[in-house]
Picture (cartoon, one colour):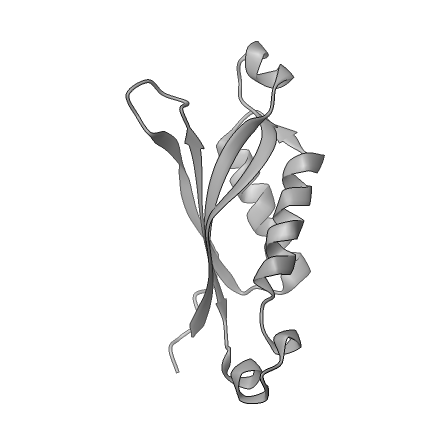
Length: 121
Protein backbone atom coordinates (compact mmCIF):
# COMPACT_ATOMS: atom_id res chain seq x y z
CA UNK A 1 0.00 0.00 0.00
CA UNK A 2 1.17 3.47 -0.80
CA UNK A 3 1.28 6.31 1.70
CA UNK A 4 0.61 10.01 1.47
CA UNK A 5 2.84 12.03 3.79
CA UNK A 6 2.25 15.34 5.52
CA UNK A 7 5.26 16.37 7.60
CA UNK A 8 5.75 19.14 10.15
CA UNK A 9 2.27 20.62 9.70
CA UNK A 10 1.94 23.34 12.31
CA UNK A 11 -1.39 24.24 13.90
CA UNK A 12 -2.29 26.53 16.78
CA UNK A 13 -4.82 25.36 19.35
CA UNK A 14 -5.78 25.59 22.99
CA UNK A 15 -4.15 22.56 24.61
CA UNK A 16 -2.95 21.79 28.11
CA UNK A 17 -3.91 20.82 31.63
CA UNK A 18 -2.74 23.94 33.48
CA UNK A 19 -4.96 26.99 33.94
CA UNK A 20 -2.50 29.27 32.15
CA UNK A 21 -2.54 26.94 29.12
CA UNK A 22 -6.32 27.19 28.86
CA UNK A 23 -6.12 30.93 28.11
CA UNK A 24 -3.60 30.82 25.25
CA UNK A 25 -3.04 29.03 21.97
CA UNK A 26 -0.02 26.82 21.55
CA UNK A 27 1.60 25.43 18.45
CA UNK A 28 1.57 21.72 17.70
CA UNK A 29 3.61 20.03 14.97
CA UNK A 30 2.02 17.06 13.20
CA UNK A 31 3.40 14.33 10.97
CA UNK A 32 0.93 12.10 9.16
CA UNK A 33 1.33 8.94 7.15
CA UNK A 34 -1.92 7.99 5.38
CA UNK A 35 -2.45 4.69 3.56
CA UNK A 36 -3.93 4.83 0.08
CA UNK A 37 -3.44 3.35 -3.35
CA UNK A 38 -2.08 6.04 -5.68
CA UNK A 39 -1.99 3.95 -8.87
CA UNK A 40 -5.32 5.15 -10.36
CA UNK A 41 -4.50 8.79 -9.59
CA UNK A 42 -1.06 8.44 -11.11
CA UNK A 43 -2.36 6.65 -14.19
CA UNK A 44 -4.96 9.33 -14.89
CA UNK A 45 -3.04 12.25 -13.33
CA UNK A 46 -6.24 12.98 -11.35
CA UNK A 47 -6.23 14.49 -7.86
CA UNK A 48 -9.76 13.28 -7.17
CA UNK A 49 -8.47 9.68 -7.18
CA UNK A 50 -6.06 10.10 -4.27
CA UNK A 51 -5.87 11.73 -0.84
CA UNK A 52 -5.69 15.50 -1.27
CA UNK A 53 -3.04 16.57 1.23
CA UNK A 54 -3.97 20.23 0.87
CA UNK A 55 -7.62 19.52 1.77
CA UNK A 56 -6.53 17.29 4.64
CA UNK A 57 -4.11 19.93 5.95
CA UNK A 58 -6.79 22.64 5.81
CA UNK A 59 -9.26 20.35 7.61
CA UNK A 60 -6.71 19.69 10.36
CA UNK A 61 -6.29 23.46 10.78
CA UNK A 62 -10.05 23.88 11.16
CA UNK A 63 -10.16 20.99 13.65
CA UNK A 64 -7.44 22.65 15.75
CA UNK A 65 -9.35 25.96 15.73
CA UNK A 66 -12.68 24.37 16.62
CA UNK A 67 -11.54 22.26 19.58
CA UNK A 68 -9.61 22.59 22.78
CA UNK A 69 -8.39 19.63 24.78
CA UNK A 70 -6.40 19.14 27.95
CA UNK A 71 -4.35 16.25 26.57
CA UNK A 72 -2.37 15.81 23.38
CA UNK A 73 -3.56 12.20 23.54
CA UNK A 74 -7.19 13.35 23.23
CA UNK A 75 -6.32 15.68 20.34
CA UNK A 76 -4.61 12.76 18.57
CA UNK A 77 -7.47 10.27 19.08
CA UNK A 78 -10.21 12.67 17.99
CA UNK A 79 -8.23 13.94 15.01
CA UNK A 80 -7.43 10.41 13.83
CA UNK A 81 -11.09 9.41 14.08
CA UNK A 82 -12.24 12.49 12.17
CA UNK A 83 -9.66 12.04 9.40
CA UNK A 84 -10.44 8.34 9.02
CA UNK A 85 -14.14 9.05 8.69
CA UNK A 86 -14.14 12.18 6.54
CA UNK A 87 -11.42 11.11 4.12
CA UNK A 88 -12.05 7.34 4.17
CA UNK A 89 -8.58 6.46 5.39
CA UNK A 90 -8.18 2.79 6.33
CA UNK A 91 -4.89 3.26 8.23
CA UNK A 92 -2.91 6.20 9.49
CA UNK A 93 0.07 7.03 11.64
CA UNK A 94 -0.10 10.38 13.42
CA UNK A 95 2.69 12.00 15.41
CA UNK A 96 1.91 15.12 17.40
CA UNK A 97 4.67 17.14 19.02
CA UNK A 98 4.19 19.93 21.56
CA UNK A 99 7.38 22.01 21.43
CA UNK A 100 8.65 23.61 24.62
CA UNK A 101 6.30 21.73 26.93
CA UNK A 102 9.12 20.23 29.02
CA UNK A 103 12.32 21.96 30.01
CA UNK A 104 15.39 20.52 28.27
CA UNK A 105 13.30 18.73 25.61
CA UNK A 106 12.76 20.10 22.12
CA UNK A 107 9.24 18.64 22.16
CA UNK A 108 7.03 16.02 23.76
CA UNK A 109 4.09 14.26 22.20
CA UNK A 110 2.46 11.07 21.04
CA UNK A 111 2.54 8.78 18.02
CA UNK A 112 -0.51 6.66 17.28
CA UNK A 113 -1.53 4.24 14.55
CA UNK A 114 -5.18 3.63 13.84
CA UNK A 115 -7.01 1.35 11.45
CA UNK A 116 -5.82 -1.74 9.66
CA UNK A 117 -2.55 -1.42 7.83
CA UNK A 118 -3.20 -2.64 4.30
CA UNK A 119 -1.05 -5.37 2.80
CA UNK A 120 1.54 -4.38 0.23
CA UNK A 121 0.46 -5.41 -3.25
